[in-house]
Length: 471
Image: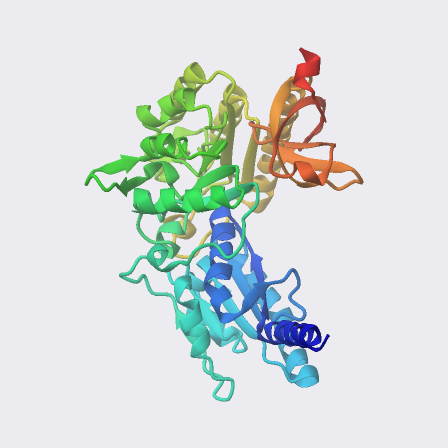
């Protein structure tokens, strides 16, 4: 009995030691899917230091705001959140004698590093999107006694992906995989070239290795990410660069990878090889997010998009010729400097011609440091609001019409999680629709046939189908 009791006591002490060593990490993620991927990778690089993710900032030992600089007043939203975190940090120190490390990462950090530490001196670390692999080193440099502030927003010579460890935990049935970063297009409204840097494509081998690890841990669907993902030109061991289309063909050969998606794309980089893949590779889902921003050639020129609406429409025609059921998504900016009523009417005409399954639309907001921000022909805010409302009415109607058109169809749904109601499960159709149906948690990670029964604005309800029985 003594040996057994000793083992039990030893195990209890071991668990206690692990609990003491484990620190809680909370990451709040703003913005795009790339930031979601980066937040997951920050968790990976901090795991060897004993940090484990938590869902709440209160009680965390380290809080990271992974920020986005794209939307209006992005910086002010970050500073507002930092004000709340100051209270959390002071309360932990005064009431619990506990130090909380606060870090700001992402594109706001890259653009406004010095300003962040000036306005929020309680921030310990400011780290850019290209240097978060250095987080363990930066954490080690913190000295609470001297209240030193650490800023690392360089564009380093080393490639961060070469220093990222393996995933600390499974990502789930659907996961993101970053294959490309940065952008060389320099659209007049966009800060990405300044915050993410020049275009960089990961080598083919490292992409395939990460994909295989994710699939081995239970991932069934991968979304390939990049600020301009279809500009991918990753080095292959053969000495030749691979395009995105060639990469997708190789990923389709990974055993267990059932679905592939990619985002975000530029119309000029939709080459014939990539378009052909949509017809050749069944794992590539029939859904494509292809931003245009405006239907007016005049506005597109002022935006420095370097393509016309006809070029964009020609790409869609080619895609639909190869994959007739492909669902299109897009991005639109209304009220770009100098946009006239006639320009906006051309945007509405293009939307009507394409027929989107989903789309994102925003009022133009000046981003400091971009050419459009200094334009003297800014559109009045009231006009922007009116145009946005008109555009969104049309886009919402198209989205509902697309969903309505799929009623009665049997589609494969990747089950990702429990739904919001008892007994309900939730997943995605090939067309990126959210689908809710009655099921059980054992189905998470499976791809099940569902008959889509009722269309809603942003989702579908469905019923699992026994295909053998139906036959």
